[in-house]
Image 1 (cartoon, rainbow, N blue to C red):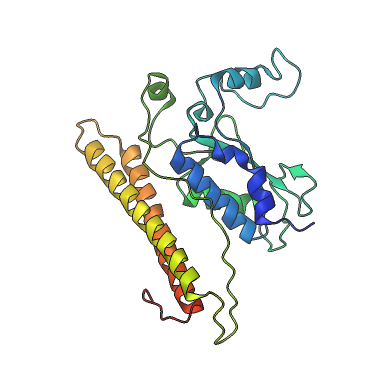
Image 2: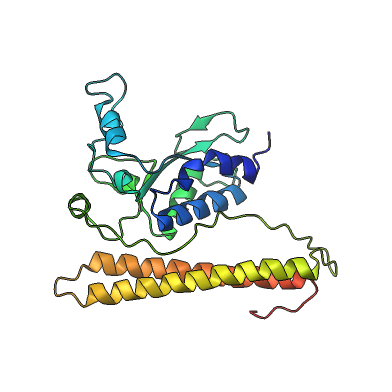
Length: 260
């Protein structure tokens, strides 16, 4: 079985939960897509988790059968606030799900799990494998500088006005002098890319406002400032990638690049 993107998208349906913070969902989709392009097949096993579900999970291995998998009671996990995801890996045939952190299914002499960890970290996530007490290898969270105590008290990170865009592969025939995208279709794709670029520009401005507001506080939080800065930088990187993709579309429809 060849694992297609359409198949893998359906398996990561948890990223479509509206209770998940949109920035968390967007970044996680990007990780799953980038890993798929590398021949690593990520399954999002958990995303938003209700407090009741968290208490059920906490009971496992304590008052209920099973192995202990979490030290977090309901309300003390970033999952309960839509700010975390858990993952596993599919075997290349798509028939099994594994939590093996040493495997190298795509045979590039790198551990698949650690490649995915790097993709998450590059997009502003913290990895549970770096936790000092309970090592939570499948866990990734984006806290926006908010502690669990703040979240329990009702504080929440702002939710940017954005539509989560599930990445899609665009296949371009790269044979010399062969343009495979008709001009009219290319124009529609370019319009979508431009809208995505502008949406990310708006998100960058929101993070800049959040950074300025936090920096103006007498008790400003350096961690929040750093996370806002990282989030804005990640968006700028995505803008550059959109610009590069737009040029590929222009060239594929017989026009000149404008960003290179």
